[in-house]
Length: 272
Length: 156
Image 1 (cartoon, each protein chain N blue to C red):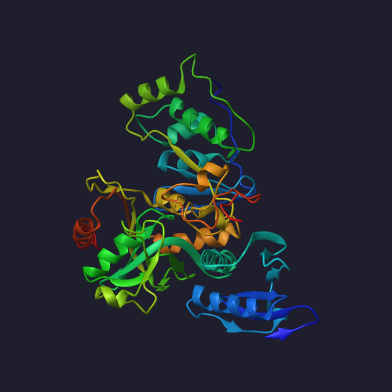
Image 2: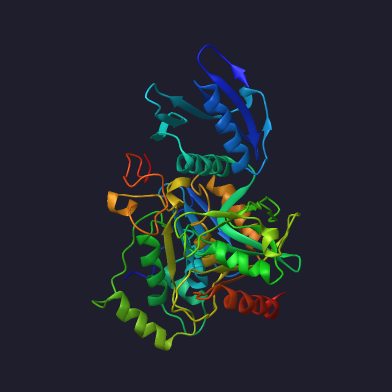
């Protein structure tokens, strides 16, 4: 941690993105650094601040209000508490995902099945985590319930954070669940993609797999790509590399457990 | 319509990725992505400023006609994928009527261009995005605040 006359600073690099975290409060900075480590699953290393292009300043005001100013734009301003730091967690992850120079992040669940990745693009409240959990219970390896991280070779890397489960008892709060508590195992190595499933929870739905053409699939993926407008040419090239040859389908889904079994059977029947 | 016209595909400011049968075109100026199906892609690729509409139609072989090409050109022009705007006039018929007519007779797939606008920024993909306060309230909303702030987030 560096200290200047009025600021405390911690500079780190994660997924190729250099971030300068600073604050006028040492305690706040310490909490922010812990939050960043948690948000990025420890995939960060301290670096010299001159390597950092991204800037996050946490300004603690006299009345206890904490403002987060990201690259000059105010993102949050409130008294810090659990929900505040949860949102800060999102900001850090999105900042890194948005600016990662050689990786493309897709808002997606990912599991490994027989050595290949199944990618489940979807935004919040699509039911990704529930479906990922059920697929893992069926024997798939857990890669992520939030991001498919794709490299220039088209391989998906794990981002295996605790599952953020919403339940009928707590539909708003997300309770972190370790995959091992579900009897699951984590994937650890980058793997190619075999299938992509666009799906959304619909209580009345019956599974009905409709094939999507590669071009349409690639286009639809942009809806879930983090920061698609930034370096679009590179991102599209990476996505094309990754999804060429993959089977792309869409289907609504109701009961996740039943759907997961049915879908893995579909994957086995359509595997190339 | 003048079938001797030689349309020119726009190539500047575009990212172009070909898949097996389709072409994905990303317009860097508008941040719109377009997926051209096989027919639309073939027409677009043929728009080199030297090949007439008639010749493009002929390249599809037996069973195609210039209306098919004009359908493609109409959509390409509408999506700003040609150097100059070209509007097809189908002798008073609507595009839908022409599609029906061609669809019944053609062995070549109707040209289709699907489009979407790429999301604006990373936070736009989060569920906490809003354009009015009502979007920040409700059982499915899990955001730091119930007010919509100046950057369009349900956040303080």
